[in-house]
Image (cartoon, rainbow, N blue to C red; front, side, top):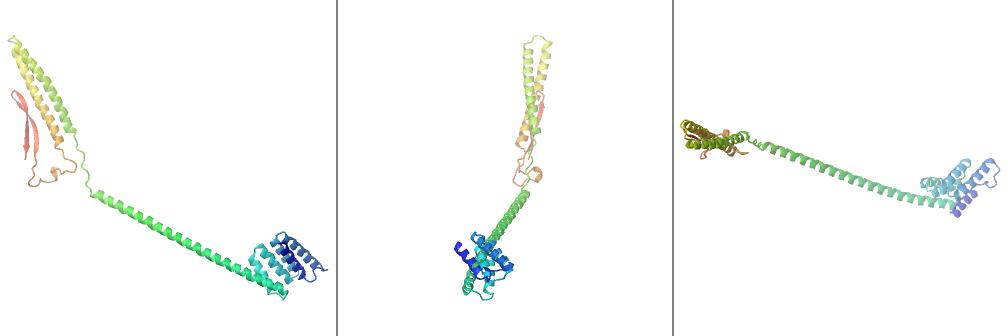
Length: 292
């Protein structure tokens, strides 16, 4: 690099007529700027050397300065400015044939490099556009997939809603308060009948054992009365319990048609049972009434 920089500055001094022995203030300043650019070039400050040479060229437009400016910009990596000043040197007044040839080769080299860069940039741009198109296609496909999934979901929800509307409402749970009340009341009546029956048996035993002609008829009457009430309690208890059990057994099952839904079809049989207590002269019983 040192040899190249020295050659450039040497050519500068060679192609600036009268610089070395300049007597005027302009020539002295140009020489000072030439020496300054030489130092900058050797230190690797190529862009600074080019700027210094530009200042010198403005003072004294010597064609050789254009060549050195171009060389400095080329070393700085600024191919566009280097091409500009190589072309200006080549198109200027005839100078050193060797420098003109060097400038022409530099122009060819830089233009070829520029074409390669342009080609690489175009390829990179095409690659970027292809990637953008692929991404756009992917996003469009993803959007279509999501829209189809949403449409399928809405179709399933609509089908489920229609199925729910078509499905009959479940039958309300049967009210078993009355059957259980009847069973409870019947159970209590049976217990009361047992107690009264035991009391009636005790009175009957007392009547048989009694030798008192006055108390004996009274004990017999009490025993019969207790027995009658016990029988009634038995009958009522059995009827109540049986009615509660029958109501539970014959209650409509969920989904079954009720009696109000219409007449029974031909060939079918419908039974209706109603338990009724019956009181006799000396006891009580249970009667079932029914219709077909």
